[in-house]
View (spheres, rainbow, N blue to C red):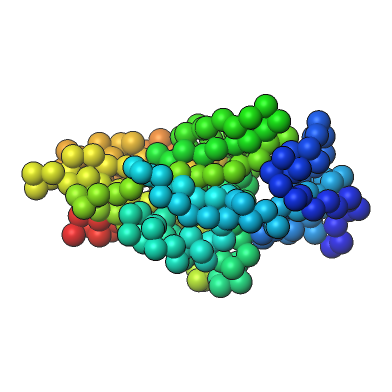
Length: 276
């Protein structure tokens, strides 16, 4: 289908983008476009204005921030995957970014666009949730910081309002006593994850001191598998309780029951990989 008519503006800075949004609720921000353009073609969304952020080089970076790594919202997935700072200090983010879509998607899609889209099937959303990442959101009133746990609020719903812009994501540096894994099941290489698992575990005294597990496509938002985290620390079977508290969808890819089964299998495998 052909998208409904809309106005188009190119933002020259973050301030300019916010000014273009003004007080309009009928505007959409355009970054890589891999999530928005299909919705436009299907007329699922019909914004009156598109604000193109593609030229805002000020939001494309990976920087050392002491205890964390800061990633600009317009950093392409390919650049996140290749960033030496992330490969050294948080390889989980680097690795997961390299599994998104196909090379075309990774060279155009951005981490901020993926996060702001709020898709529960997104790889990076669950990774950021497991890492307790922080997300900066800019508005005309300034910049506020939201924890990943509070950012994702529903299917395609986030804490970023219609006149706000995600500008930066910060992830902690993982130390040598941290193990990590990201595993996902999908029918084809470029498909969204049927189910995915992001796992970070801190090892101590031959056991697990703490664990964080983010689940992909197991509910209306990315979810923390709290029961599985507690089981892993206790030395119990984390996979047996991986689906506890989830509400997975049934669709053409898989039934809810199969997704629950997959979550258990992937959590067990991810735990073995992270602690191996």
